[in-house]
Amino acid sequence: MMKAIEIENLHFKYKGQRKYILNGINLKVDRGEAAAIVGLSGNGKSTLCYTLNGIIPRSLKGDLKGRVKLFGKDVRDMKNRELAPLIGVVFQDPDTQLFSPTVEDEIAFGPENLCLPREEIGRRIDEVLGLIGMEEYRYENPNNLSGGEKQLIALGAVLSLKPSILVFDEAMSQIDYRGKKKIKDIIRRLKQDKKTIVMIEHDFNNLDAADRIFLLKKGKLKEFEGELL
Ligand SMILES: Nc1ncnc2c1ncn2[C@@H]1O[C@H](COP(=O)(O)OP(=O)(O)OP(=O)(O)O)[C@@H](O)[C@H]1O
Ligand SMILES: [Mg+2]
Image 1: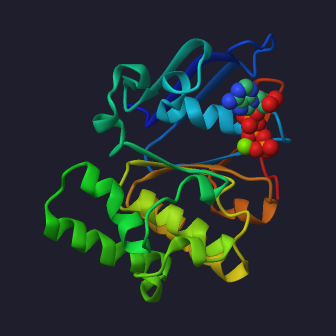
Image 2: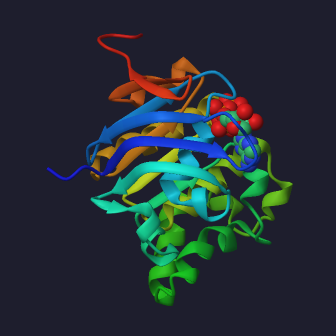
């Protein structure tokens, strides 16, 4: 069966650096599966996320070897239009992801860019606001929200594109207990919808939504065998 994500012998080092941050990564994730990746700071978890959605090598330059395929297609062969409905990444720092004057605009931004019909965009805004439980913030300026609320909006901005693959790069770091429960519920629902999830996490309490857990260390991924928690 075709894998949602297939990484083959991936190597990457940033331009001007000597060390390969990713040094022979292999990973296969099925459709509908949630894979968690843990690892100490600086081990390349975010770098790996950049290779999944094409930021590497498009915006961040360096030496890239190996292959990243999403549903059988190499990320490097896909244009943004093709990638956007396929994969969405929620990053660690919501301030780098939010730039619209209202929560509503933020959530509508992706679908508008894809030139979806007005009514469809309206439907998605309602649906996403319900999912993240932020209906009453619809007309707020994201700048005025708390860190955790901003992270929920950043998630909403990705959810509105309805991507087949969702990547959470420590996207829950500023969210309180209630918000985390909400996100875990969303992840469970996404899995039921056969969405594929990659979650970068350092908080082991957030890993219970994951089907498989991998450690990224010294440029390599290793799957935890058996029970971890
Ligand atoms: N844009 C960049 N240019 C050059 N080097 C970078 C860049 N981004 C990250 N690095 C380097 O790559 C290494 C891995 O960084 P990365 O952010 O991928 O780690 P991480 O596992 O996500 O860490 P954290 O848990 O702190 O988020 C670090 O040594 C970092 O300094
Ligand atoms: Mg990181």
